[in-house]
Image (cartoon, rainbow, N blue to C red; front, side, top):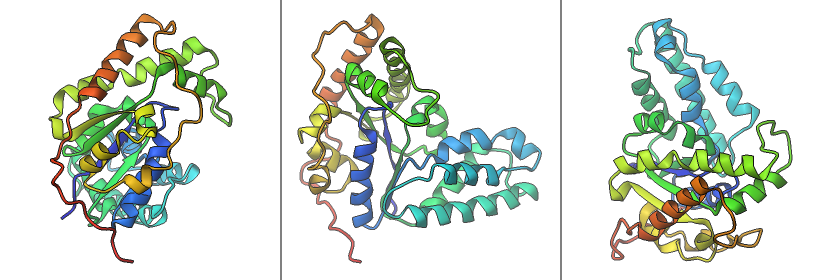
Length: 278
């Protein structure tokens, strides 16, 4: 039976990519798939609207172009990309013929389900999901969420060192901290609606120290010890109480409390599956 998807959330430069690659390998070894920067729900938010359905015009070409411009990564990404294209092309034909109905969330759920296939485990990571959590919840009403949080000072320092073609990148510490606060602040509204078994808040430095391995393994239903053992912070941990803006400091305290108080969703007696035979 296919398990509910695991969605990895977190702001930019908060360690989500490193954790996503670890989950990708674990899911792949157990016969599933975890996409690193899959971003399909994000693209459906942009290109699948009621107006599109009303006018019979699902822009599958735009979605596929965006996927190929910065391709999702990780083991199994090419196979996932093939399933996505098949589903999008079929959905676009149904929209053009008036067979797809008028509910974009329902059609989005269909596309995501078909793209996942019959895999026993699947999931995705993309930072921008934090900007569209209500839409994500509508598309994946049974999803489980891992929220990875990192000290805002560490994230800001990492943003300011980031290179490459990123025109949206902050140029000052103040702007970087404001961006961290804005993005991470969106988590609370969704978290309040989710039952305990569908959310897990993980702190980055604790993750790198190996202190979150058991909880993450129980939450995903997979033994992640060997996949998480190589995670290490690239910079020193920030010192607590080092002049953060008041809204940022309050939010960081709330997220740290959530990480410390998140219960394990499963009992320690749960037997985790063995890796799939190839």
